Length: 220
Image (cartoon, rainbow, N blue to C red; front, side, top):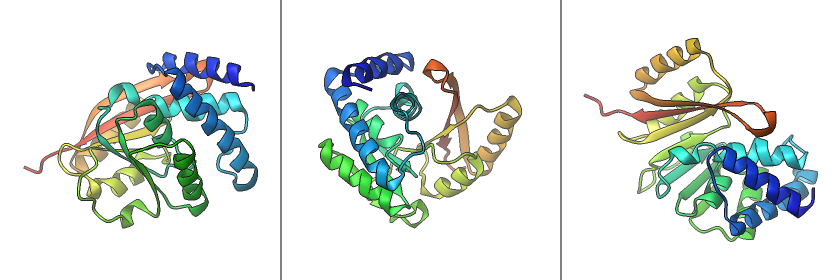
């Protein structure tokens, strides 16, 4: 895929999920794609190889929570892999303070490389597990992950890291009404409130996505 086709497709599909990207941000995504494709030859960072699929299934998918987020908050991305959703969110909303944690060293190495290459400020990548993290001086207002297929282990993992008012954004596949009711019960058990459920279809028929927004409650 040449650069002009890449920019046109990313611009159009990001707008379809409610995110407008400037020319300079589109350039950063183009560099991101080139580095991802090159590193993927050796390190298998993502099983998605086709550039059009990377644009929609990785870049645009990562941007879907942005219209629902406060853009000047501190955000923790758990299990980011090759940077999704943390790096696309940072590119699109530079005001975000982004902290990325991944347990796989080769992916953390790539993340540090891409942060340097794109000259991103206010974003860090750490190798390790979220449950082993030291508590930061400042709380993360938002914890986000698209690395989990199921909500239960994600809630169990991040709930201890959250203070009242903090938000967990879980990026899952399509869910049924029955699953949503079960998720409500899971949330209550961890003192979380399911504030919002956003169901959407990725552009160009690339599949469904469900965003769950769960807020930590004050213990009464």
